[in-house]
Length: 144
Image (cartoon, rainbow, N blue to C red):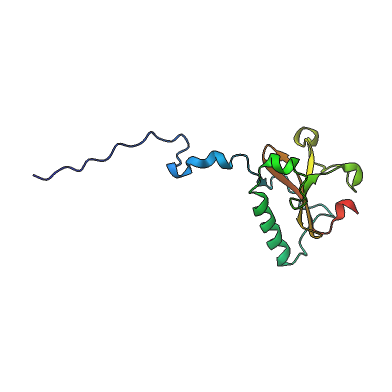
């Protein structure tokens, strides 16, 4: 008579359906994430259609680098290499992002440089640890 194979008992099901290899998820929970939900592609100053491939390569490299930082660290660091700081609208050519219900959405506007003195900046705001990109500013036009 053949022996019956017994399945090993299963662990308790994970609420997310994610296997145990995702157990360290909390260590990434506070890191900067990016959203393009509020990206403005129609602003007359902030467009990137004429940029070379190197611009997009540097942009992606920079976003990858920033995604290794906690949002709070980026907001509070005075580190020059981080190149992440708030925007004071009174020093710019714009009064706001011009988003509907902006006063409820945007606690403080932020920007980061793509690379030092080259490739411009990215402007947006945080909701929690998610940086919502509003404008790509490859020509530094927010301050000109």
